[in-house]
Length: 341
Image 1 (cartoon, helix red, strand yellow):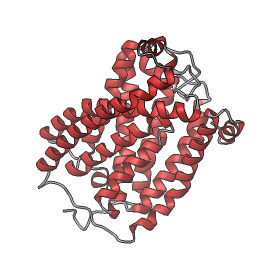
Image 2 (cartoon, rainbow, N blue to C red; image 1 turned 30 degrees about the vertical axis):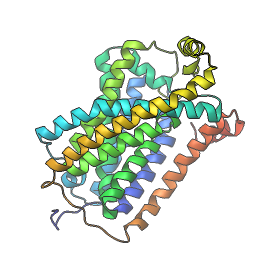
Image 3 (tube, one colour; image 1 turned 90 degrees about the horizontal axis):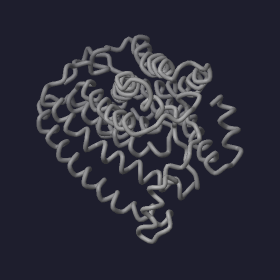
């Protein structure tokens, strides 16, 4: 159990931190992206100064205890092993969720927007540099924000709510319709592992494995697409690749019908992965039964989330603008310009 002397964050800290992070990422991050700096430098600066540093500064300002707040505890070998076992299955599940999301987005909006900037970082240059930028830096910085101060504060509402909300807020923060479902799913699994094991390093390992394995795949298969930087850029529809058209012709279907027919088998694979992950999480639960720290609940803790509403509203405004842009509505581009994106 937590010592009563420990000073830990509450939901007000979580809400305030989410609003601060959203404002910094959208306002400051977008302007950094227009400075013309190399993509690698942009990623490092934005992840450290905008994502990782603010929660530490807020924790110091609130005189919170750093080690328990961010769960800076060495993980056990069995926990690391289970995390490594979950990672590849989670990637398959995330890929399935992303593919289904792509098809739904294409059906809904009629077009897609691919972040070619991030893909270029994955595909270009040294594979070790790509892994550092896409796997190591985000795994450390983003976990400190979402599974550190934010999740710890949300636990005043109960462990279940903290895991759900931490994953949801994490998914929204990627500003990508395609990746929202997958990133929310990954965020919830990471949140559960961090909560049960009491070590944020397990979340970092899971995050690193997800980004790292995808980076290796992209680096070995994807050509670099010219683009100005690591911000979302319009790209050709991935479903316009000739392979999809040939497969559709092979089955005597239109491309749209073929893509829709993929949803059910892909969903079945997704469910199968969920079953495997659920089984592994049950093992995690068993091996951490005597080590998990039960959070102290506060029935009025939900009120603290009001401080996160401005940040959430700003993020939802960006999603609205992106949706309008996909519909070729000029209001989308106007809103993005107004926000400086």
